[in-house]
Length: 431
Image 1 (tube, one colour):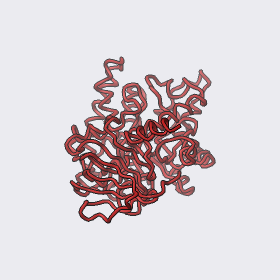
Image 2: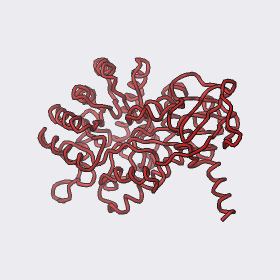
Image 3: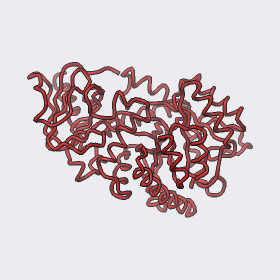
């Protein structure tokens, strides 16, 4: 991905730098050749080149580009299980993924960690983004997921003879777990996504208290993945599934819903990040009735929502790490509404805005293994910056509307927001 050349000065705004530090009311951010050279109080800022591009924050907020830590680029308006694996051919799903990636960038998300992707499309989507063929967030790839036979992601009965090939690799036993990881190694995947537990979506077969992989299978997946320098994550709701994942050495946990004291102690000892994805549960409960979601499923989502809120608060108060993101692309939780996760944590869970933004920036970059490159506004980091025409400490929901974005900056380039639209209009007149 190319970096801008020259200098840009962003001023007249409140700085929330993503580190968890208190905001700075009158701040300046200087960008030189695509990297941050200064971020702090205006009164301490070095002089800028008179020729520098100027971005006026209009009294709003300057923060790091957001990181979506549980991103499904190939999900699109999913309303039924078949929408996930057999509705569209790979060619169309690839186009949908590219459109979703562009949308994520326009929503202020300059980076994302895939949480599973049909046909390993995210591997090639990442290449297209990195080579400036298509716009989108900096990606960490996951590709096809791994699940035990008969588990949450294995819903096509054998008589259909269609399997689950594009979506998941199904395993029976540790040997098949190792083989599945080795299959992903060849495809260039960075993260191995697994399903240690079930979910409220499958109350009759694999509910949120059901285990879908054995400890031996999970151990085999982790050892093999780590041998190939890949990381492992897992859909973990049931308490015992959380503990099994931590015992196996998982690098992150998705959801971490029902966490007791023993699980929390294990989590903190390993410093394992958790991505709760609570907005998905909230949307399932509030919008489920209007889309005809069965009451048993809604009740299950209510239970996971309550358990997830309790666990997230435990983790935050204990000094653990949380990422923001999760399961966008469903009919009731569509792409483009990613920032609702942040609003939910502030308005319903009780997180502060500064803590929430830290989770959505610094911790997200740590999860991606790229904390030295981006995630905070500090000298030397890549200039991935979001400039919002609102005081986010007063109104976090302003992040939900891209109309509030003055600029989405990636590598020093203004990629989206009002300034990008203005620049495009000028180019159109010149041409």
